[in-house]
Length: 110
Image (cartoon, rainbow, N blue to C red; front, top):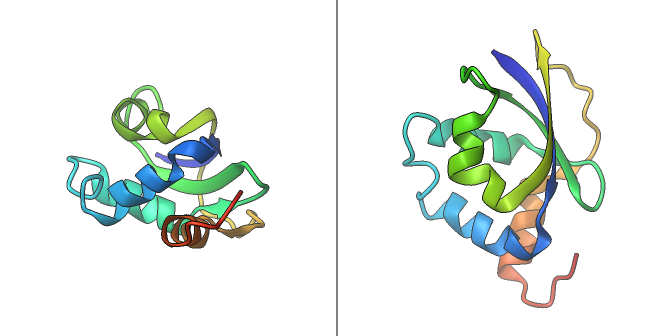
């Protein structure tokens, strides 16, 4: 099933999150690692602490596995909405760009 997801970021965990995304730790997780990696590459920051994205999940409780293994470490205050198609309705800046800037620039502040 396809969901529109909204979550707040734990700013102090973002460098660790990006490291896990780029070093293969998350991508190699079965069965959903590549899906989570793609979702984070597509996610948009809609304000200084909130990201939104679309992601497919087949758990009985949406994102139960993803949250238990990855997302709850780095994100909180989740909202999931079942949708039937991806719409171009999320307005914001690239979350991936934010993560890159914060990871590689020690002077970057949020």
